[in-house]
Amino acid sequence: MADRALGLIGLGHMGGPMAERLAAAGHRVVGFDASPAGREDAAARGIEVLSGAEEVGRAAQVVILMLPNSDIVESVAAQLVAIPAAERAVTVVVDMSSSEPERTRALAVRLAEAGIELVDAPVSGGVVGAVGGTLTIMVGGSVAQFDDLADVLGVLGSRVVRAGDVGAGHAVKALNNLMSAAHLMVSDEAAIAATRFGVDPEVFLAIVNTSSGRSGSTELKLPRYVLPGSFDSGFSAALLEKDVRIATALGRGLGLDMTLSDAVRARWEELNAELQPGADHTEIIRPLEQRAGVDVRDQASDSSSAASSGSVPVRPTEQ
Ligand code: NAD
Image: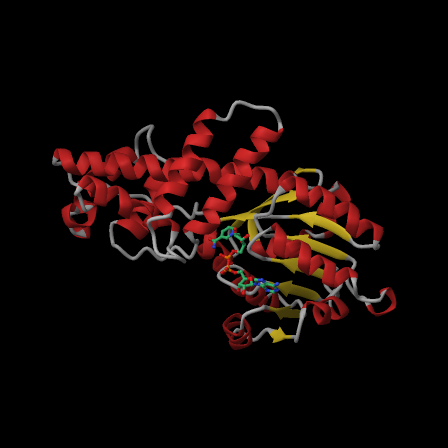
């Protein structure tokens, strides 16, 4: 239904470009962010910025949340429910944040009591995917809800998949990021070991990326954010830590043995505690390099020799 107004609450690294894409596709988009910087950035993107979450709920039939965590999602949802029914436009809330699946299920029940549907639709693909509309979107909701949102989600993602009923998207997202954190840390450790042994890290990645050890970390994160030292993926180490905790708690809640996953969580927490607040998740290599006394960037050849030693394929497979 192209004539529905869309609201986007949480106009940060991801929500800002997502709102811009939806507006560019012809949707009427209104938005709100708690931070003045988020509001200014969104206004500069041509988004109509309103004065609060309630105002968004009064103006938009479909309200998308792109917020840091379940605590904030629940508090914003409570603001939407508090709008008197006669003044409320919102009928569907789409939580595209990476939230806690069990809390999402419980929130769906509370919202349904107020006459609002909840669908979870978290994403993978990072800021690059948000800007380009190439996100993978994992949807938790009924088939009818999934079909109803196709015109909206299709603007944001190139792979929109129904994971199951409400909460399923958030479960898959957390588990994906648990795996991603594990891949990143083991890739960092391996790149440091290769470097210490005397192998050029660019050559190491070029070989791994056509071999069985490859992952999103070796194909994208190390070549694009770590070796050049830009560390600007736009996804923070703190948000990834949140996801890893959600995933391990999910496994424990299901009565599963999460020994390796818990080790990933503990290691991530330990290393992240040594980073500056707000650090990019790709900076997790820094404390590892410090311990090893190795800086992989010092040892990396320039890009021209890397190209001649083999390709380092880049695919948009971020968080
Ligand atoms: P961000 O911190 O850049 O953006 C979150 C925004 O929410 C901020 O601008 C903040 O001011 C705003 N906010 C906080 N509380 C609010 C409130 N009560 N009302 C309105 N706005 C409020 O985070 P992000 O990187 O855009 O991530 C957003 C969500 O997407 C998170 O759940 C994250 O885990 C997930 N995610 C991020 C990435 C990524 O690469 N950055 C990728 C996939 C998923």
